Image 1 (cartoon, one colour):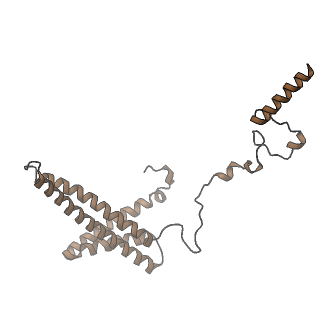
Image 2: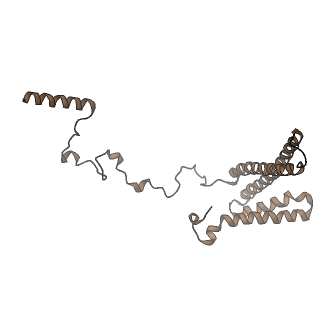
Length: 211
């Protein structure tokens, strides 16, 4: 009887060790004294990390020596010009579609009407993209030049570049047209500068604003 129980026990132990179903190993208090516990079963000491060290309140990245954390006007110029061209093309295409449908409303749906609408969409999209792209190019060029000349980057550069852009863009129509363009550029750039500094002026945190 004892031999049978010992044999069955050995067989169970062998099968348990083979398939991983054996009992959990038992450790003494002396062996577990140097293992840090974090409210769970003993784990690797590399997992015993204070969660406070994992919270990043600010952006952490490596910058070259002397580099700024924000992009300069020269780096933003490419995005500004490209985005303005794409926006102008989209708005112009929508306007061309509206105009094409309006001008051909008396025509039946046919190939000539489709071609006329397509031509209107293409012309308006190219015209709007050219206009907004030119404005963005002038604004970026003035902004970079003023920043290099003053050696500083602030809202004065933004307002000055916007005013000069409006004046030069409308200068072909004469002094009055250039003055009106300058006023429009001043108003738009001033509103943009006010929007960027709204948190500082009102004393509210950026997270409390709804975008």
